[in-house]
Image (cartoon, rainbow, N blue to C red):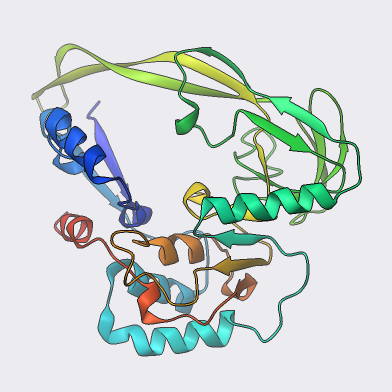
Length: 310
């Protein structure tokens, strides 16, 4: 079977926030800090499938707005900002909505305050790690404190019963030493959340083999090298934009992109607006903390050019 690289629309939303020394290290050892320019990418000879149809929302105007942000179509910024502010910037924000922020520290601060103000008994959950497993590559943290009444978000999809997905928000109704009961907002159903098994794999090239076209391609095997068992939940009073890539949000949420945008922030801010807004199934669910401006849109031109060429 041919090896393919599936190119989703969110590919443009990968933030280039690595520090210079990290980029230099990756360039020296891997050829480039972008995967599509690395030695491994060239060696693997991927077939590329560009999956660019938005499935998260059916709102055609919202889809068009996200494309303007994704591709940095500056001539359309005035109408874009006017539409976004009309739909997403409200005069008043309902209390107790989760806040999605550009800054991890700000999101953590909001969660800590909410947890501290909750008078219920705390339950602590710790990750059980085996083998070679890097927690930095895992959506969950190595420990989590929950209380009855806490607002939480699922970090995985329920592939078995379909009762929640990555990004579903709910309220903890009861905790025990093993898991937690959560009432999800989108359905009103109470679900018992137990530890999820996360796996990390390493790719091994066994040699070469003939593909369906009669070409020699690498014979690849993916081997599980480490596992982590942990509740796939996070506190949802404060959410990080970066950590919510892949999530689908179908309930109201405040989005904090800062007041002035990212013009003076170097590479910080690349794609953050696109990542944040494209999480939502409906633009009406977004409550912008500040009015949306052209300076909130920042596109990585190098990634954009490569994607458009494929």
